Length: 487
Image (cartoon, helix red, strand yellow):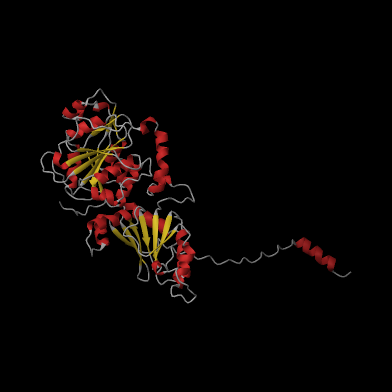
């Protein structure tokens, strides 16, 4: 397996997967099936028992999410099937995390307990992961009414059309997006279609991003997919990985309420959803931009000016990170005005209680889950339009890094988190991340004129002389003269 082909943005065209049934799988797969009650679980497991993926490379973990009575495994099930009962927590995110924690496979395949997958489903998604190790593969799904069905029928069926009326099945809305974006190759935000019921990814990647968030009761799959995008992965939908969803989802029954219930969670956690952040003056859980300023050996006055400019821009969905040797500061001894860390201590006392400002010793490799990071000299304060215009520039073609060459030879830069993360996945110690980003997302240089616009000079005041008094008519002038003449 070549683990490091430098794919550009989400274009996976350089990868050619093996033909189904004509290759020898090597990676082990753990299929995690969260279930609460699981009235249709027997059909899901029967379909998994008939998969073309080798039995010795596949295990199935059914996670019982507090079912009453507890779930009992049906007779028709994959050879290596286990029940997992979480000791704490509840909900689908908690269940998926518990299953992934118990998993032995190199790949995690999530599959909902009301899905019936075609025989090639696991094989179709797993084959891509034998080519490289930073992919998320997505299965297809259609919604069907549940016909009279037995687990034996499902196990013996050669294809889904033998069981379900696929001509009248409702397609998923994600499939239209996939078609319009050339299979997500041209998608600006491919994580949008990774909506939960069936996807596969390396177990290491699942744990690297922290798994699903149990505090997100709705839209948890989209939020998780967004964090995967910030980790630098490539999303690949596979039309051969077909499945049906038994019954219509909740949003089909009451779409308006379903959408409204999800929006607050995504608004706080997915900053790229700008349409959900239109309320002025709000602060959000995950900011849109992290502004990183190195304040080492800098005076408090300079830093104060830089922070004020950063927080007062047109784009205010930001957090400011001040990098400095804060760990030098000790509070277990007396300090005076001659303290060698006087300026640093003054800055800490000034900014410590503002939740928009973070004090750290070293910046993290990426600002994930924040989608953008700005780095620039602390003594070059941001113009009010700087961030807004820099983001406009990189969003035109999804550039990975925009470098502004300042007049004194220094630079300021806006970095795309997903590009930084991709470079970290592909790079080796000593590699310049910008060299990798140039291939995967592009690096652009620019002059500062557009991003630090010079204010137009105020026009000089114009002095307008008073208008002369209008001349009196001749007759009136003669009359005045006659009246003043001596008699």
